[in-house]
Length: 145
Image (cartoon, rainbow, N blue to C red; front, side, top):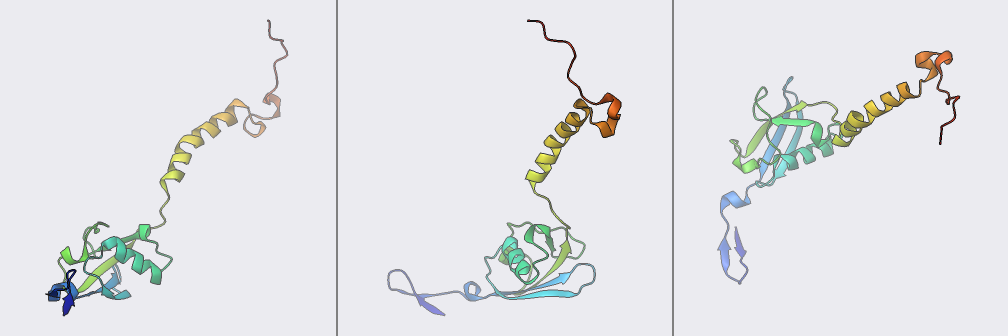
C-alpha cells in the first residue's frame, strides 16, 4: 500500500508492516481450540494477547494465564512481541491455567498481621484456649508511685 508521509511525500509501506497475525489458542492438555484471534497487530505483546483472550474467557484473567509455543514448553514472557516469536502469520499458542492468583497485599497482610493476631490470642488468654479459670484479669495489686 501507498501512504502519504509527514511532509506530503508518498511512502511505500512494506508488506511486513501491513500484515496482521492470526493467533489460535489451544488447551495445552487436550489440544482443544479455546480461542481464535483475528487481525492481531505484529507489535502486540504476549500481555496484549492475554488481555484479548480474557475478553472471550473472563474466568481466566491475565495473571492466571500461561501461554506457550509448545504444550510442554516454557511460558512466554508478557514482554515478548508477537512478530519476534518463531511463528508464521498464524501463531498457535498453548494455554495452561495457573490457578487462582493472590495479590502481594494479601500475602503481606497474612505474613505480618497473622502472627501478631495469634500472639494477641495467647496474650489475652482467650477462654477457649485456656478455659474460663485462666481468663485475663487485672492485677489485684495497685501500682506503687
